[in-house]
Length: 259
Image (cartoon, rainbow, N blue to C red; front, side, top):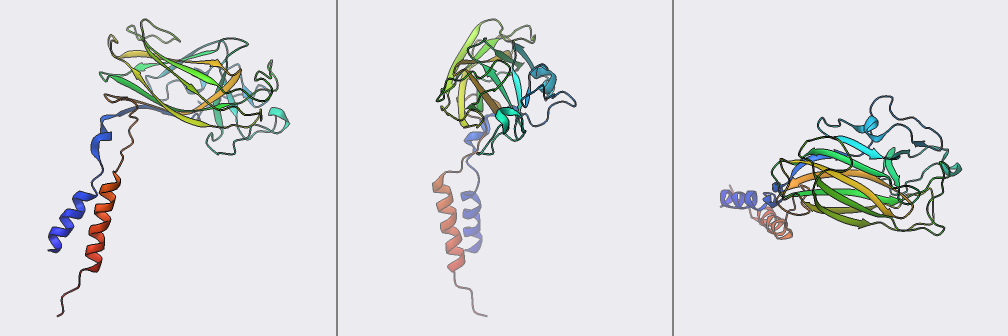
């Protein structure tokens, strides 16, 4: 009887395997800029060194390109707004990247190969934030919710850029408005971009802030999957936990044999 119960417990606790369809291609929390690449050009902002100088080749095969300036912000400094950029949610760590929507059309592109999967699933954090220099502030008084568009382009030649050939798909995400110009208010999002129709797996993911004035991004996870929005989590259904817990209870309560 004990062997039977233990076998049932083993099968009850096997993780639900449906989530294994995703292949994680890229994770980036921007915490490890390439050596010497981050320079505080003023206001806790790296504005002159491009994103690819800081994070290109992490890992090999992933390269950034940009139009105009895409900044890297130093969180926990003292210069921005006289107090530094603040992160009460503790999600950003020491660095995040940021871009404009209005004063100029900043664009960021990430080129890589998605393989043969149907979907590129992208998880990220977004937040409104603002600059007190470099032409700022850019966000209207009272705060504006940032809106980002993520577009997936075919890139058969495999080159590095902010746009490619055929537009395969796009998705928009909206953050929250905050009146505190130096304080992040992160929201997490997962989007599914249909990669069907790409030529050879090479694609460019373009990031564009459509509105909000100025905003930040962090904590990228990019996964290839045949399921939309699957970034690799492996859920364990509640029923399995309950079944396993019940069997544990039976084992705990089973009377022992008297010797």
